Amino acid sequence: MAKTIQIQQTGGPEVMKLVDLPVGNPGPGEVRIKHHACGLNFIDVYQRTGLYPFPLPLAMGNEAAGVIEAVGEGVTHLKVGDRAAYAGGGPGAYCEARVMKAMSVCKLPESIAFDTAAAMMLKGMTVQYLLKRTLPQGGLHPGDHILWHAAAGGVGLIACQWAKSLGYQLIGTAGSDEKCRLAKDNGAAHVINYKSENFVERVKAITGGKGVKVVYDSVGKDTFEGSLDCLRPFGLMASFGNASGPVPPVALGQLSLKGSLYVHRPTLATHTATRESVEQMTGELFEVVASGKVVIDAPTSFSLSDAAEAHRELEARRTTGAVVLVP
Ligand SMILES: NC(=O)c1ccc[n+]([C@@H]2O[C@H](COP(=O)([O-])OP(=O)(O)OC[C@H]3O[C@@H](n4cnc5c(N)ncnc54)[C@H](OP(=O)(O)O)[C@@H]3O)[C@@H](O)[C@H]2O)c1
Image (cartoon, rainbow, N blue to C red):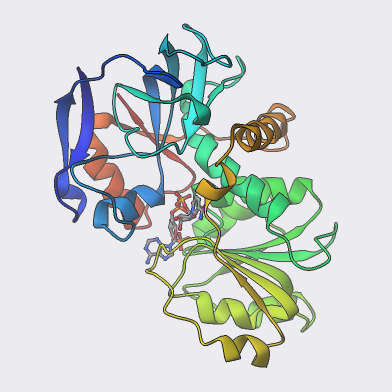
């Protein structure tokens, strides 16, 4: 049996309950992993509220790190005793131990602590596919400005550092002056407090009126329109989240009026659909962390049983960087 955070119905943080669930043995292509730290991500909120629907009851969570306890038939890249970590592979990560498909699970380098891994797998792989695979026409080049919303969040702080290492001038938005300072300390070239400043005007001023080639927007409803206005002709709107609520339907004609814009709505799950892709993405992530170009600060920790409190903090915009749950 394993202590697991489960929901029987969608709703607020209070619907999450700590229950004992059987774990069992791995079948073909599966592993059993004992968790040392579980990552908290905004997607967990969408799954809890039902914005991203799943059959109920639902075991929560999408990321964790720990030790492989058992390996099913046909699994060759992991063995019992390996330190391992994963992002995705289906919900069920807020628990002491689980059985899951081995495809999403990677061997963890010795130099990366379990809580660091739980703070960086999902967020870091997301930044990898955005900065490396989600590019405007003609690509990005050193010196280019890019706009990144919620730059002091879990995904945001990794993006600030990774973008700087690639030579991009990341313009980061955040909801307080303190968060703006944090984004700047992590490599943002410019920061905008989008609660007190008009981010469209600031982006125009910073880019000499030209606008940016790409906006990475995970805030959604509140920033979508403004983000389109920050783009130069043929620019790319990469809308990858909805922390403020889902983006309403887009009138396509708007995109022509604003300069033949592109809109893309990616999700990590598509990028991690094959073992080869997971290996390539995690390989780049582990490398950029090992090189010191991206430093993962100690995450804020909550006990697994306090998952509801951790969700309240995340949704109230009171967290910076990553949050993990410790079983
Ligand atoms: N599509 C994908 O593949 C993918 C993968 C991973 C993450 N994501 C998305 O990336 C975003 C960041 O994820 P994360 O886990 O690292 O979370 P996070 O950035 O640590 O937290 C979300 C941040 O969004 C900002 N925000 C703006 N308006 C908000 C509102 N009305 N309510 C709550 N927060 C608001 C807040 O920062 P400020 O106070 O600074 O505004 C908040 O701290 C999320 O939208 C997530 O869904 C997408």
